[in-house]
Image (cartoon, rainbow, N blue to C red):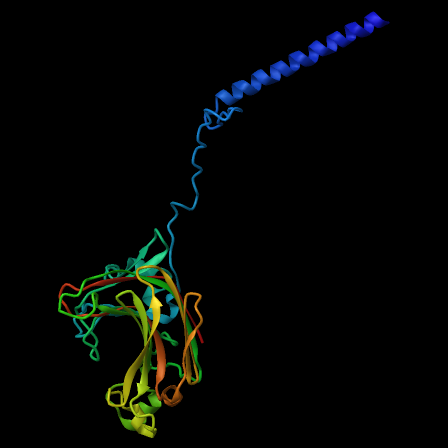
Length: 321
């Protein structure tokens, strides 16, 4: 009995040994056929680098988060020879159609490497009420009627992620190194009712708020009454005799991306740069502001030098009313 058990034990031992050996041989052969499986030396030497694992999103195109359903764009050129800067309505920009418009592509185009839209401009054709050119979006609450706008009482919020990309140097003896560039606005407009009541020839109002890049700093320029006692129809005077700018430096942004949010409400403007505490304008001038408003965003270049230019990127842009 003892001998039989030992023979059985020896038989099972060799059986397990040979099966284990065969398994190791197969495993070893499989490993040598796969060069991506690294060999790890238990002593810590001759450990090869793991191969880089490609990110499936690295080479995928990225696009900005902007819905053009309620934006038209103004360009710094007059290709249609109508005497003013060319404009393209939401209907031809939506559903990514702006990417196929040959006239738009030089001035508003995707950078798919970082998910942005580049707004490029230089001095050429400007609107009747300005000396400066722009590649700039103009809000249209009603995409078919630019005369429908909003009051401060109705309010609105604009939020964007953007950055200055490149801007020319000043060569005209200016005290600034670079031209000013307005990157976001609340612009005033005379209401249909006041146009009818006063028979004004133009409905253009002053810009209530201009967020302006100046040598790397972001400044807020807000319209305020020259005389806070001004009342009634005199408030509708759009000249600098009635409305002038006060300003506040929001801080340095340089050429880095930043988040900007403006909350407009009755008698109050709140501006937030990145995660900083909001800066608030709240005064009698806002209480008396007689104009309707619309938001603007993009690249409004404050220079007429022949070689001037600027590029601004927008990654996100949203409006809420």
